[in-house]
Amino acid sequence: GDNKAACLVADNISEARSQPYWAKLRAFCHVVRGEIPAAELTADLLERTGHSAPHFYAALARATGLKIDDPVVTNHEPLLVAMARFSGASLPPPAADSGDATLSNLLKDALKLTPSELGQRLSVLTLMSQNGDDESPVGGYFDLDETMRRADASSWGQLYGVVTTSTDMGTSAKAAGELLRRADAKGLLAPFAALLGDSLAIIPAHLRAQGHIPTFAKLAVAENDLGALRGLYEALPANDRGKMRLALASDALGNGFMMGALGQDMTRELAGNGPNGGAGRSRAVRDAFIAVSLGAQLSEDSALSLADYNGHLTGRAAAPGALLALKAASERGARAETALRAASILGEGGPQNLRADSLGSVLSALQAAGLQELAGRLAAEDFLAGK
Image 1 (cartoon, one colour):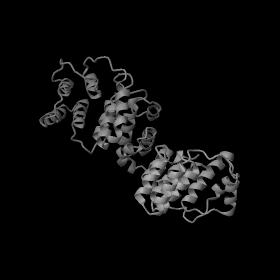
Image 2 (tube, one colour):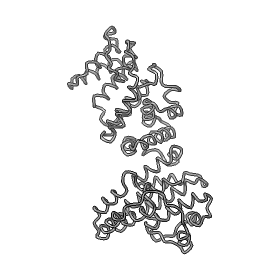
Image 3 (tube, helix red, strand yellow):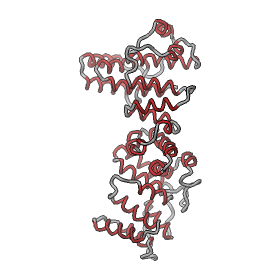
Image 4 (cartoon, helix red, strand yellow):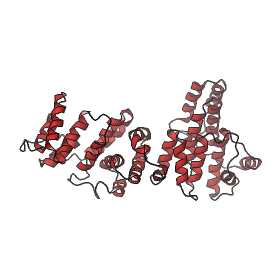
C-alpha cells in the first residue's frame, strides 16, 4: 500500500481525530517517520482509554523495534498488514478479494456513515495496493492520471488522499471530480460531497471546470448553489455546447423562466433549424415543456413548431389518475401532499425517466403549490441530463 499517502490523510483529519482508528494510524505514521517516542506515547494514551487492540499493540511493538521477534497477526486488516510489511514480519497470502470486498462494504454502508467514518474507511483503502508490494501502485501515489484510470479499491482511497492533502488546487479539483463521478455512478454523490465539503469549498469554479463538469454541475444543483453553477458556465469556452445546458439549469434554479420567452437557441431547435437536427429538436421539445411549466411564455412561432411536432416523446408516461390527484392536492395548497405525490410519480429514476408532458405536469403542480425551489431543482437536473 501507500503508507505516506495514508499518513498525509491522517495529518489532515480535523474531525474526530481522537477516534481509535485515527489514533492507531497516527501512531504507525510516527514510526514511519522515525518518531518512535511519539508513536509509543500515542499508543500508550490509546491503551489508557481502554481501547482493546492486542494485535495492533503487538504490531506496533515490532515496528518500533521493542519486540522484533514477535509475530504479527493481521487478519487481513489493511493497517496491520501495512505495519507487518513495514517491520519485515512474515505475512499470510493476501485474501484475493479483500480490497474489492472492503470497497463493496464501504459503498453499501456509505449512506449510514458520518463524514468522519466515511473518511476513515476510505483511508483504509489507501493502504491496499494492487499487488501486495511495498511500493505504491503503478506510477506512484501522485501519478493522478494513472490513479484515475484504475478502478481497484486502493484508487478510491488514493483519490481521497489527493483531494485532502494536495497543495495544488487544480490537482485537488481533478481528483475530486473523479471521486465524485464514481460516487455519483453508485448513487452516493451526497455523502461523498459532504465528506469533501471543506476541500471543495476552496476550489474555484474555473478549476472545477477542469475536473468533471457534469458531476460538479449536478452537485451545484443538488445543493441549490446558483453561484457555483454560474461559475462553471463562465469557465467554459463560448463554443462549448455544455454552456447551453448550464444556462438552462441556472435559469431553472434562479426562477429565470417566469414570464420570460424561450431562448433563441431553443426556438431554433424547436423549428428544426438548429445544428443538431432531429435529436436537437427532440431535446428542445422536452426543454420547452419544462420551461413553460416553470412560467416561460411561448411565442407564436414556438407554439406553431410544437403543434407541428409529431415525434415520439421518450420516457415513462405518468398514470393519469396520479396526475389528477397531484393537481388536486396542488390546487388545495397541500404542499406536503403535493411533494409526496410528485415524488411517487417521479419514482427512483427521477425526472429524466418521465415523459416530457408528464414531467411538465409534475413541475406545474409543484409551482402552483408554492414549491418553486423543488420544481426548479428537478428541472435543472433534467436540463443537465440533456445533450
